[in-house]
Length: 340
Image (tube, rainbow, N blue to C red; front, side, top):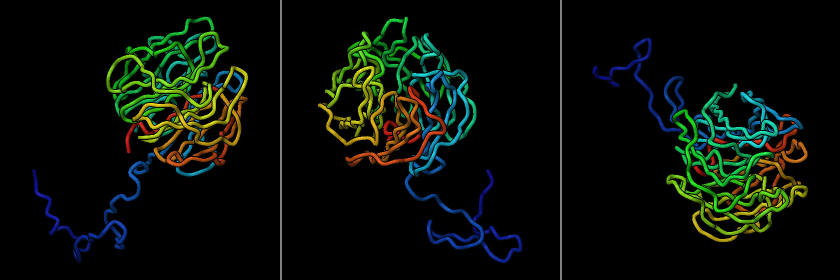
């Protein structure tokens, strides 16, 4: 290997060598500037992508926002298949959308995108069984693509399924939920995945139970505590330590604007965080470890609003989706499951 002699580097005229200075004090006309600022937003990270949904028919569009700013969503591309009720989960580079309803049939396909780019989705693999859900969870290597589910005409299952982000292939069995529910609210830390609330098989009863798993292992979900309000089909978001359950349906035909929070590393009941700018269900959330953005909802809302996860209080307007959507899936490349 040849030596790299920095004392022999000169400019084109040979009149001077390189300029080396600090991160914020560099003032020469050429050179290398070292990165600065929060690591979660370096290299283009900090993007949330909302996909699929009902508007009112099944939809295959994807749209994205920059979570640290405010403003309207921008077109990202299209999924392979139009669907509602998908589950989104992501690493820092790759986003997955699994399951869904296409319609009146259980969808088993898993599609993937590279979050930092735009364009159409690609085939990743298949779920063991279809799911009807709107939020997933993950750490940096493993994504939960299904946690219980039902589509009309198919039985409710308690199955939890996972994939490894870095490889393509079908989902594998992780374990079972503690109870038969679907449309739970999902979020997590780098260690734990949380599934809060949901609907029971009769489609007429909503629960407030919270269940958890350890993402890096296999096994069944365990009891964590209870939400302040019974609901399902809401948005989930988290920092590395705190998780939010955002809005949802208290019954199949009633919405709430309530936001709850839990400390993910402990056990116990959720506490009140604040309220959205409107009541909604069939919504999803995208988030960084700092900010959670609620997107769309029932009935085909375009509204987006946000909260700061570490604090408590009511949501503030963020902007609008390109089209109104409900029952869509959201993911981001800077969520709490990926660490700081």
